[in-house]
Length: 369
Image (cartoon, rainbow, N blue to C red; front, top):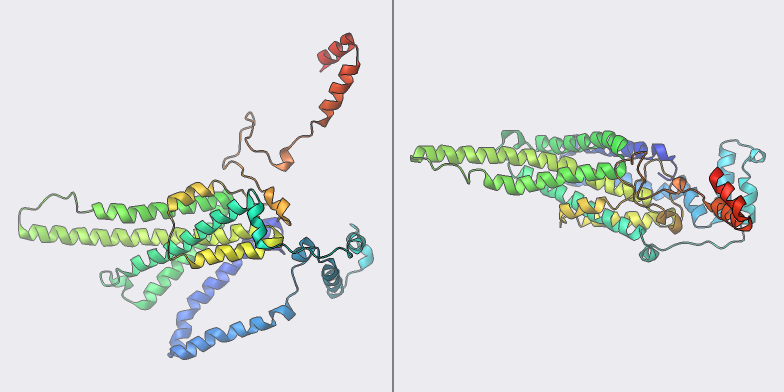
């Protein structure tokens, strides 16, 4: 995403997600061809050996080199790009290379993720996203276990492949829904919506299902008692599967959006560290956090749609919270962005000039204003 303009970042990320889902859909076919789990494991590991060549094939992020003041390496990379693209360095209209030459003497300035603790807003944003990542991926696993727990009672889920492709289809539907929701509601609004759906699915599955059959009327005969118990169990299983599907759908979106959101609002100098914290929280997702707390925490996050990627810690601090709904024209917004701030320095000059004028001239000037 460091290579993409603001309007294309989410689209490129979703393309990568769809490629991962395609691999998930092809996995059962590969397992059927191998027939032996040792052979399957070897085939899965072999492609990762190509990652050893990653450092020589792909260049370093130019954005990260510039943000950490590694101007010598950035200059070499820019010259490499110009040679590969057959560009003429003399057509540098913005004067990037001359300015870069002036900064070559500066020492590199790498930033450790620990310095995030000294910020006011940045550490809160990362902690909130860590909690949401932990909850999203953790409760997704719980919903999947709940759905697979009904394999014996539901014929559709007795087959392993049907169960596997059902979960893959839910993941695909979740990614498609993210494309639409994030486009209209933004990152924070989409994260809030999917977290509310996850919380509702969890609360309904835990609370509503326990009430089914509790307040049913006591039957008169033993036969009616067996029919009532069987009907109650059947209804509970159907509701449990439905809530599990909704929960898996929403929780996958929560976890994926949390990782992507962190990549956008974390400054370039510590972006890898921030992503590492969020992904580590997802690894501990087996212990889910209360979802209602996450809903409140999401409201504290800023909106990063169509915004430039922050480069330094000070830039990351400028990502302040905006209201979810746009303010009306007649209303004064509670939080103003940098673009909305007005320069009122001219009023001080006018006031100073008014003090120097006679009383009559100052009064005429005030009437004119």
